Image (cartoon, rainbow, N blue to C red; front, side, top):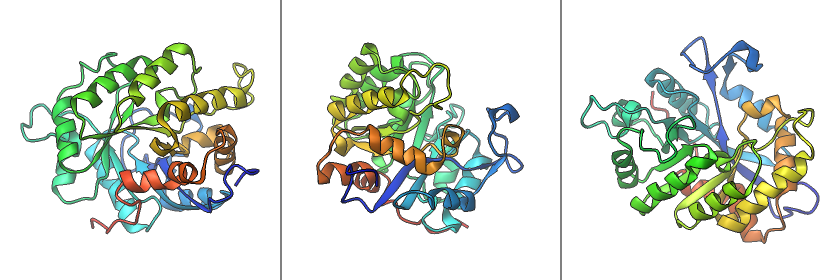
Length: 298
């Protein structure tokens, strides 16, 4: 892969990619000035990952917004295009007016038998303790009972809230996107919160969304910042509870796909063979149902 970091790895599972089509559904946050394509399809993903230094065997497609129309579109893409993207994680949007909808917006999709590997709680602008998320404990109960994963997109100050949630639901696998840090600075408060989170044995985290453009005026030493964040994550979780995610195509604004893989590899401390394989593929296989092609939902 890169240098002598991962001599035994010849394939990976990308645990965090996005697809969308703004002509087919509304993406609430999408703006032209973000410099993103209006349509990102499986063929585009396949072209991007083909540049990687090793084979990308599968990718976990995370819903970009929070509508049922988008959820069904994303599931169709996964069902019709083989291993890429692969498993699907849909957004959680509460539906308190529907008593049996523990999965919120995604409930009718799940009830129709569409393969869904997990749901993502994307609330970085919400309360630090997650108390403003309707139906949160019921969501966790439903996910645990059906063998699905809870993903979280949160800011650093919300990590203790995620830890408390994991403590209340010890049978649930939780995956924190972007280390709960993203492109931020790995300061002491974040490190302490990460360590508290890692004390819950079924919490995992993605090495995703960490990179900034080298031309960013805020970047003094980008490689050192990312390496410090990754080192803290390895120290807290161990490599076996970490997953690689590119955050493509959001990451394409920072660097090409192959460079994101390369930067992540360079940021890692030395790992043994078991930790290397776990971080790059095995943990994603375990959490997302084998990371294999799903049958088309039709």
